[in-house]
Length: 165
Image (tube, rainbow, N blue to C red; front, side, top):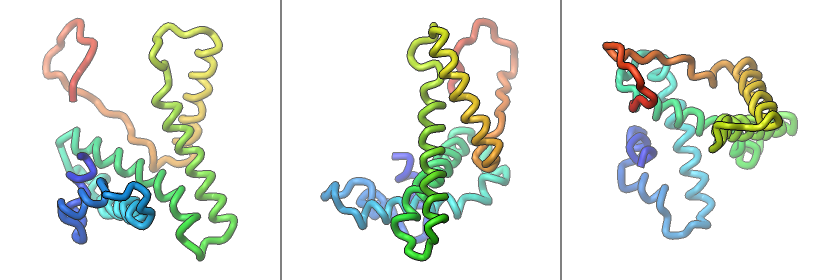
């Protein structure tokens, strides 16, 4: 539903066409899948300036746009080597390497701590290794770093363990 909400911002799509892209009658429709992936990449390119500006004070919208931007990096890095016949072999390898690093980093950042907050020594080493990979990725590709966000609660509330956006 998030993609339906935002892909309609592209001039070539309306809600019906976006829903058709996302929910095809034929799940093996490769041209439709490629069109969907290219639409996500195009959307991310069109919203790049808006993410850099103070476009939205709505944190949820901004988080959605940043998530789509990250998704578009992943999609572009896996899609380009297979659809752009003008790429050199080294450029294809670069894209595929970027994809594998992004996919691994995203996997590691979802799994830090896992479902068990009490981890063993070896798990702690794995988590630290994953954090190191993430840190290295952000150092090499600073455009992927979302930066820090500060929450203002307005007043000091004790014993808060969860804050809803």
